[in-house]
Structure formats: C-alpha cells, structure tokens
Length: 93
Length: 396
Image 1 (cartoon, rainbow over the protein chains, first blue to last red):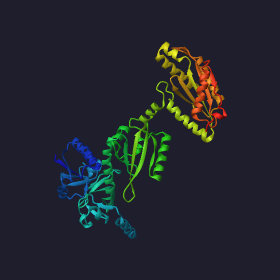
Image 2 (image 1 turned 45 degrees about the horizontal axis):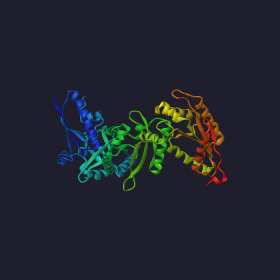
Image 3 (image 1 turned 60 degrees about the vertical axis):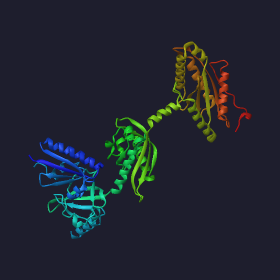
Image 4 (image 1 turned 120 degrees about the horizontal axis):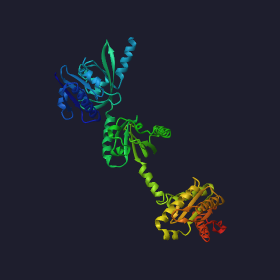
C-alpha cells in the first residue's frame, strides 16, 4: 500500500486555519483507521513564502495531496470530509 | 438564448465579487475581471492555474487569497456545481472581506487584552455571528471561546416567552438606534437562568458602514445579592432603615406632586430588655425574627415593613389614611398579643400611627409617629394615633 502524503498550507494561525488543521487531523485519523499510511505536514506560508510560490498556491488553507499521483488540492476549512475525499481523489470506488 | 447568455455574461463581468469557474481537477477555466484585483495578476495568467477544489462549510468559509503585494487577502467563499457539456465545473464566488477580518482580528486581540476585566465581552458581525469573546464571557456564560465563536446570541436564549419578547424588542431598538443598554435574562451553559446588565454599541468602519457590534455585559446575580444585603436587615430579613428611608423619600415626592396620602406605623416590643436579660440575646434575636414574620403576615403586599433600629419597627403604608392604618396596627397588636412565643412566652407591642399632612416634612411626620408610640408606651400593648399637626407646625 502506498503512503498518502498531504501538505496543508495555511497563512498564519487564523480561526479558519485552526479549523482546517482540526478537520485535517480528523480526516487523517479516519484514513489511518481504514488502513492507509499517511504523512502530513502543515506549512505556514507566512514563514516559508518561497514554498508557496514554488507550489503556485492561489488560496489558503489548501491541502495538497502530493502522493499518490496525480497531485490534487482542496481549498477551504476542510469541514466537508466527503468533498475532501472526492476532491483529493482518495474515495474508494 | 443568445440574448440571455450575453445578459449573464454581463452580470458576471460586472460583478465586484470574484467569480471563478474550476474544472473537475481544480484548474481555473474562467475568471471574471474582478479576479484581477483580488489575485493581483491578469486574468490570462490565472486561466490554467491550479486553484484546487473547494471544501468548506456553508456558513464559515473564509479563505485567503495569495496576493503578490497585499499578502493574504481574506475572502468569503461560496461555491456551487455547474454542469457544462456534462462536465461538473465548480463556480466559486469570492468576496473580499479583508477589511472586516482585519478589524475583527484587532477586536479579537483587544478582547484578549480585555481578558483581565471581569465584565463579559462579546463581538458579533452585523448578522449577530459571534466573532470574539473574552475570558469573563466564559466565566459568566459557561461557554468556551471555541463553543461560542460562529454561534449567535441565540445560544443563550432562555426559552421563556417574556424573555423572547424582550430580546426581539431589544433587536428592534438596536437596528433602529444602533445601540442598546439594559437588563436581559439569559441562560448559562449549565441551564441556569441569570440576569445580565448589557450594553451594545456599534463598530463602524471609516466609511461609516456597520461592521461589528460590541456587547459588554456583567452578571447581575452578585449585584442582586449585594443589593439584597444592602437593603435588608440581616436578622429579620425586613428592609433596613436605609432602604425604608429611600421608600419614604419616594413616597414624599409622590405626596408633593400628586397629593397622595400615606401613613406610618411605628412599633416596638414591650419589656424587650427584660427578655434579653432573662433568656439571653439569642432568644431576643429569635423573638425579633418571629415578631417580624407575624407583622409581615398582617401587612399588605404594597406596605413596606422595616426594622428601624434595635427592637423598633416601622411600616410605610402607601395610599393609606390614618384610620385604615390604625385598623392594621390593631390587627398586628392583637396577633402578637395572642401568640405564645416558644422561648419567651407572651409578648406585647406598642404602636404609634401617623398620617402625612399636606405640606408636612418627612422629619415632622416621623417625629409625630415617634411621639404617638411614646404615648402608647405609657400603658403598653396598645396603639396610639398621632395628633394632627397644628397650623403653626406645618412648615413648607
């Protein structure tokens, strides 16, 4: 089984960012319950602006699925788990 | 259809909100002219860029746009799915709310600074969504910051019809006048209903638009208890002398303004010193408590019964003439006289009665009732009506 690699980009610790982090945590533990291995990294673009530029990020918070390919990204507070699953192309079909 | 399409295009292109069309992979397929300002780059440079799908709740969907110069611009995002040629596109509406968010952030920071004060602070958007609270808010309401943010003051409704009515009325005044101060009944998280003193003021941006409401409130429970302490006699629970004085002043101004009449009954216990000496002060205190209870049972709801001092009591009877007051005085006297006190046996009281005369001062009527009591004391266990003041005694 391949590892899922997720990067969450936030722009400072805002209320929305905190919510996104909470929702991602829940989302990840659900993936792990289903037997996935998940690597997560939270990146504050205020601290690492170059990374944001390299990734060509238009909006935050955004979670980017780096692996497995194809790469996918989802913007928002990630409160709708189903949309995140479908959007990141992780929904088992 | 062609006309319709150009009409829609016009709407989209003239919109001051940014509108994006994203393909199923989250790639920008279309951006309206407003997008240029929000993203800080030409529309042509946006098309083909990966924005990403949208996953936010309906209500709370603030997302930040990376602008090369302005940094991260807060927007409120809404999205909907549109099928074009049977491909599900996502239409995204982005409204720049950075000014409001910055103001809120400032308020949030100042509310943190206001954590030290014991008054509750709540900041809401114009639609009453709570965006900031301080720590006294949590102490008073029982709701944590996390639980309160994103909610509305509905959170604390009591559910009682009279409170709902008052709340609606408050909202109406707030919308009309912009601010409101008063007392409301609210509910804590633990279900307890309490009274709060609340002051709501608007927060405007420089252009004058309303961006927030700031509400400062304090729990009245402690204040009410203090008032109870300040206005009541610790031993008998009756009004104390200071509280009665206030009622007397109010009654006097009614008399002066409307010519209302009132009467006073002053009474004390006969041979109270002997009771104290014989049975001790604890028994004496309990006798005073029982006398107060018996007197309270005889007076009407509108009468104000107070402990005037040591074993002396005073009753203010609003809107009551002297003869009616004497009927009540006699009833109290008889009630006490026929009661057998468990610890002290039989006890009697003596009473003086006086009716306020036109133009008479408060001091004078109290002096007259005092004299009447003094006279009643000559034989004890009786009531004595005060003499009307002579013409020369009335001073204006």
